[in-house]
Image (cartoon, rainbow, N blue to C red; front, side, top):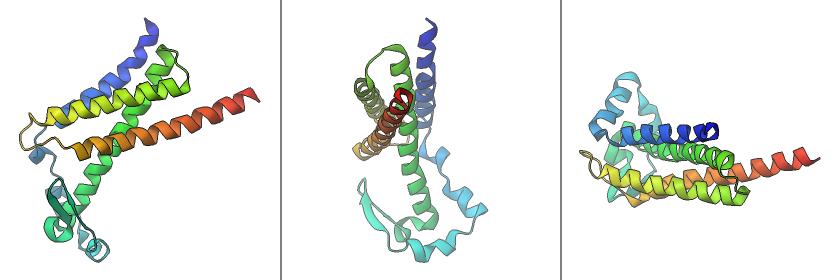
Length: 164
């Protein structure tokens, strides 16, 4: 029973993700704070060249303002980071409780993380002014895959140095 405590961390982390996804966009909007706290106008010459479409909307300084563009990258970076951490937490739980070899533990952990990313985006469809988007699930997957690659090399390095 004691070893299953390792599952508590990914479960709590998923709860934090669920809570965040349940908040309407207006409650998470960072632009008003950034506008009050910082003068980001000095970034315009460095960011003005950025322009692309994401989820059928233009992402650029012209369309979003400098604060909006910075917020966009903070939010998308959060997708990467949050699911990077979830992957690491799942890997720890799987490795400590199930006893799979490295690739099996990484694969199962990645699949659990990807499944939760999908569930999280679906959950957003029930939240005011939030929409599910496959592109966000892919970003979550990139975060999880990045963690899997780092965990693989870290574990291989650790095993190699322990065997010496």
